[in-house]
View 1 (tube, rainbow, N blue to C red):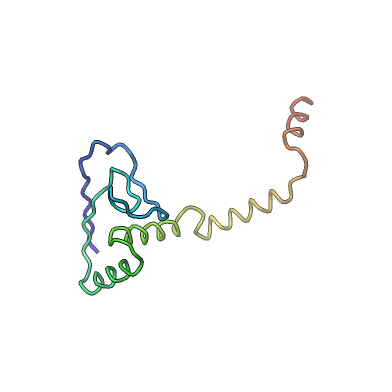
View 2: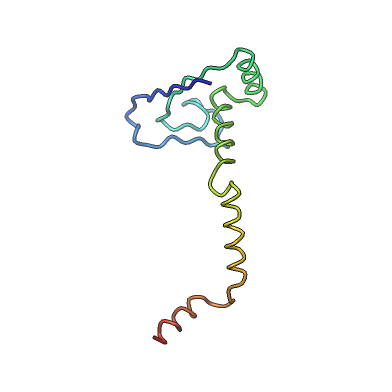
Length: 116
């Protein structure tokens, strides 16, 4: 898949573009987009594009909104803490915290500090 990004000149370009799945299409623009959005040219096989359009229509979405939703979901799945090494580190931290003494940690820190 070829991708070319085209940054659109916009007075709101300093604002980050965001997408919100809970927003519905309004008369002011695309589903959940802020004023500053990047335009992307993407090449698809014709049969894949027809399937994308059919699925987007069946969900009441524009093609852009559907593709943005797919990208958002995929990016979320690849986020921090998703690989095996990160999961192992998080389990190790859970074990360390489970073994820590209970009670007020602030009071314990103050007592240790004042004892010096």
